[in-house]
Length: 192
Image (tube, rainbow, N blue to C red; front, side, top):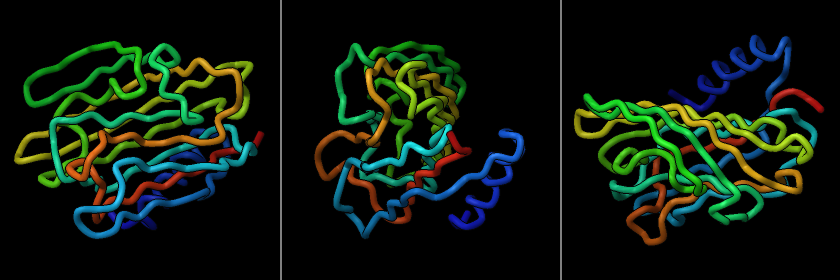
């Protein structure tokens, strides 16, 4: 799905869910050619003018499988500052799990790979107001070599300041670099 069509679909969802809320593109990452140039995708200087942030990965592809995809806020990778619960299905297996690290969600082999494509979307609520805490809900779908996975994740972040940057974290090394046609967009929904 072209980004324009995806944006139009998401705008409709944001508008109906938020009682007329608007959604604006803040920033976008478009991967280069194979093997890519980075395993991490960062968005910095996030404006504090929205109620919710939405991160959307369309056609996510990396060079290797058997790895997870994580998300950090404000450059913080401290394990104890994150918690998550996830429910996902891979093939005929359905699993519920919990974790306490920023990168312990999405099951192994279900991140974006060269052999398949991944859709990944996270809504980050209350990101500009540390007094109420930050929570994210993540939805993803993945297809690889005739199999796939779908999942939902609730992520909590224990913070003392507003979220001003976020990074999608992939393991180090060229095997995990993102490449074409990966597109990741950051949207702001509603106003504070």
